[in-house]
Length: 450
Image (cartoon, one colour):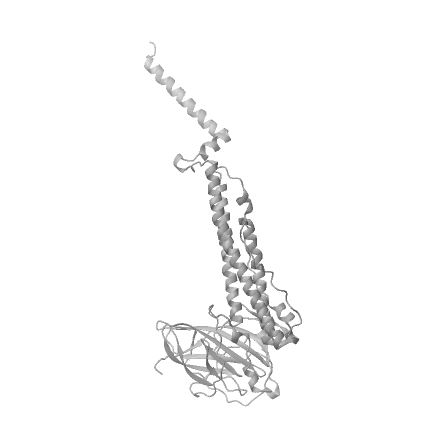
């Protein structure tokens, strides 16, 4: 019997279908270009719409114009900063020449500033270069102002003061010039996105240059006493003698670190008693904090040793050093015996604060800085102690000065009732070492009812 015609057609269809599917699968497996093309296709709704070349050119010119204006403004502001720093440099140099001409063993050249700077006819690459070049000059100008100020205040030769005043220069990104200068004919190859990103990166970096150097200018003006808007404190000059004495004494058993005492530096001193309440170590006074009667400040920035004239004339103990004029935790100064000194952070669990062992020296001056937080306006008793002379300022106001006699440290040498404002209260301590060891302490009574 012959096969049914319908059955023959069905069988042929299955044979053809299986053959075609096998051919497609084989092609995908063994023919790489076809496989890559097929699986790299984007759905139609995800494709970047094509834009004609004229429109692309128009978009490029619009973006170039926008960022030329922005980069030009940054370049102009940096140029103005250099102009101001040049003025400050000239003013400070003139003051030194009039007061201490023997210190001027070198005269720094005027800063290369262009008083007629114009951003006109400068493309984005040139403007970015202008910003980077001008920032280098501005940083040098700030270093000079700070160096000249050090020379005048510490009676150093200008050449020496300029040599030690160097700051770390920020690293800047390289502009992607290739992306900006690339020929763009389509929106689908990523070149336009790279072009736009290069412009944005350059603009943001130039704005960062401006912000950094405007801060340097404010610091320079604060050094010159022209501006304290950055939060620099001009620490009040004065003297406070005498205080309420007595109260708790303690000896935490911490050995002194410092120079070996010479015979003439030794003195009679009673053995201090133990402190009967262990203080907490912190720098925040808040109602929800750890309950305690006393708090010892645990975090300090310390700088020294500065040379000082000694005790031939007790008035020399009140000689001002740079931290009393401008508090700049990034500053580098010329210290005792010509060493370069900078602020160092110290965190401690001891009541007596001492300079770092490597900086400890006799016949020298140190400064220590901290910030004490109070959750409200309040008045609290503060106990001070020092070995030897010390002065303490809070928010620029002199709140304590010890007697000028040589003495052993004790934490309860003097008491002051001090008003703390809500928020952070900036404290500066000046410490003198008349010989041998040295140290100071600041302990706050946390009971506001005393």
